[in-house]
Amino acid sequence: MPSPSSNALPASVLVVGAGGREHTLVRALLASPARPRVICAPGNAGIAGEVKCHAVAADDVAGLVELARRERVEFVVVGPEVPLALGLADRLIAAGIPVYGPTADGARLEASKIFTKRILLKHRIPTAPAAFFSEVGPALDYLRARPAPIVVKADGLAAGKGVVVAQTTAEAEEAVREMLAGGKFGAAGSQILVEDCLQGEETSILVVVSGRDYVILPTSQDHKRVGDGDSGPNTGGMGTYSPAEVVTPALLARIEHEIVRPSVNAIADDGMAYCGTLFIGIMLTASGPSVIEYNARFGDPETQVVVPRIAGDVLDLLWRATNGRLAGYRLETRPEHALCVVVAAEGYPGVFPKGDVISLPAPLPAGLTVYHAGTARNAAGELVTNGGRVLGVTALSSTLRGAADLAYGVCERIGCASRYFRRDIGARQLNRR
Ligand code: AMP
Ligand code: GLY
Image (tube, rainbow, N blue to C red; front, top):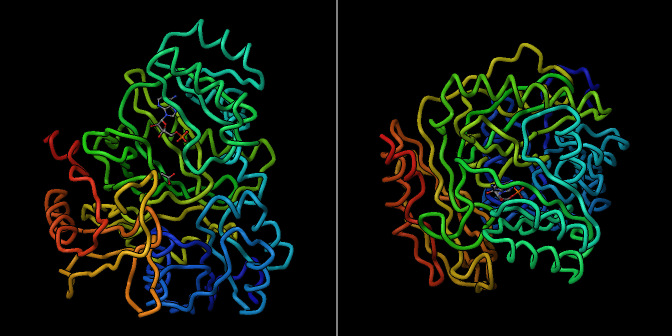
């Protein structure tokens, strides 16, 4: 096993997770000139077509540590937030296995919105004013004194569903009651934030962090609502594109100065030895960029457009972060535009069918990659749907229009009874021209 200061790249890597994000990471790691052996747990049908997948759930911390030991992997890259919040990185470090992804204290930046808001306010990082409550009465008093729209958030992890952007005070009151009295999100909603509503466009800024050193990855924008024109309920993300040109070089410099660097320093000042991706969700308001949230991991489906635009060796980048060798690193990016359309199962984010047979066009056009998310093989060996978000159809092209045309051309040719996708991924940027 390499020593922590080793310059040699690891010969074997375990990727933890089962989504499109992990399929993208597996592809990127396989493309490393170091030609590492890559394995995944638990993976999906697409990942299993490329590397060996092990049936260990992403939240089975003990099982994952055991797998890493048994397979003698030299490096673990963690995709989702749940194992990080459960202390997977802590356990791997204790076992002497280098890991990209923060320890449980750093993962609290995602696992507790109150913890994060306190850090943001303490370090004067731009964010919406908010107050914290564990009882209905004081929460109602507070929100009745604020103008609507207003935002009610469960403190803990709620699979992206714990945020209600209430258009009216009555709607906000209902959300408060559901969370604090009705137990809607269980323990995750036993404490809540009531937060002013920010107006503007959102952007996702992904930062590779190693202590006080960091590398800002290419900008992107997600489409969180399920329906065209940003209608319907929030989802994990229905499509992305990169770069997000709304983030001009001048605005990115401001974001770095006002948000990224202060955030990285705040995290270090508060005693967290953070190693991993810090995903900063930012609202671009009329008075400047403002932090909506931190996530302690790569975004999904941001990864599907951001990582393919990295020209350099992704294994080298993540390994440097893990070994404290990020200072002075210069990120090389590809000039193309990337666009990802998420093909979901009709009904997502509510109730949706599983087990529908999927047929993919073959061969795929140049510049097009289908990243698998909720896919599996049935008893007959056919590719079938196995989750709400099924595929991430991702195109790289010299223009965003070209990438959209390429991706949508393939989406239309995917056979699947429950196939659903938004038709307007990238439209905001395309219409701005
Ligand atoms: P979060 O889980 O904190 O990312 O929130 C989910 C989504 O809710 C965000 O992506 C925003 O679209 C929206 N949201 C969260 N907080 C606010 C806020 N203070 N103002 C407006 N929208 C918000
Ligand atoms: N796409 C947003 C997220 O990964 O949380």
